Length: 105
Image 1 (tube, one colour):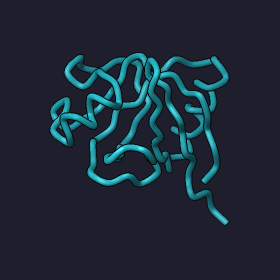
Image 2: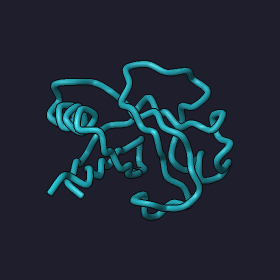
Image 3: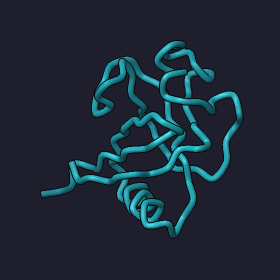
Image 4: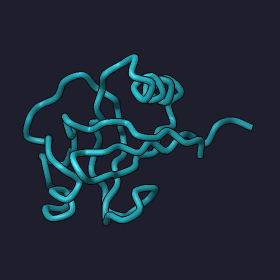
């Protein structure tokens, strides 16, 4: 049976959030980031609804793990919670995000 993806948990300062990755290359990259052999942070489109991001009213779709991004989408998960889907021009890219877990779905 093909993989249903992986749930990646990120920590930003004192908050955590989760994203679902389905691209095998991005899942592999997330595992390398967790192991400390790569440095990346998520950049994704903000969507209403929890999906795998329990505890928040939003989730990210179209997520890529990137090395750099524009500053307007940097912040904490609570910033997105307060501003809604328009935060960061509709994208969330927390520069200080650290992968703390990668779990098969």
